[in-house]
Amino acid sequence: MGKTGPPGQRGLTGGYGEKGEMGKIGKMGPSGTRGDKGQEGINGLPGLKGKPGTACDCGRYRKVVGQMDINISKLKNAVKFLKNVVLGIRETENMFYLLVTEARRYQESLLNCKLRGGSLAMPRTTETNTLLADYIREADLTHVFIGLQVGVTEVGYTYVDGNLFLNTTVWSLQSPHSGKGDCVQLGSTGAWSQVDCGATQYYICEFVKNKNTSATSVL
Image (cartoon, rainbow, N blue to C red; front, top):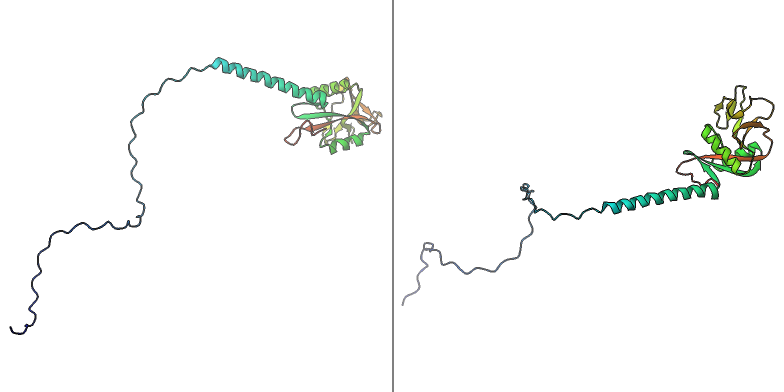
């Protein structure tokens, strides 16, 4: 047998072989980016009709509400009693009034009311004047200082807040500068009269109602 000859030329590519078996599943790849929001779907069909509800026992609830109104009314009356009898104050829609049973001269009374956060009472209406007169009478007093003095001019009186009171015929008040004193006192009958500012007597303070003022805070 002779020697092996040199390699021949490369032959043509053969045909595809038969399909092999399926390989093993690989690892899961990373999550893709979130897609755009899809279009809104159509409305679903109406649900089934529910069962009838129970009848309202309105009479019972009305009775409960009515009893609550009665209780609230009783509570308001109790609070009013507490203010009027226990705490000894009076009030209007906008003011608290406190009768201070400490005899003071007029200027001392004025200062004491100011230190409490108020001022000497300045009745400006018949209703308020009557309220304070009853307050004085129920305390078995005859007169107290109020926040009014003879004005610097001869045209009338001046409230302690600087406002003028010109109607000297109201509540039996004499004309200014009558020589009976430059301060004003309120009597248990509701009448006003002049009095010497140096005299010592009880007085009534007034306090404007606001979120910082309560019935107990003025005591």
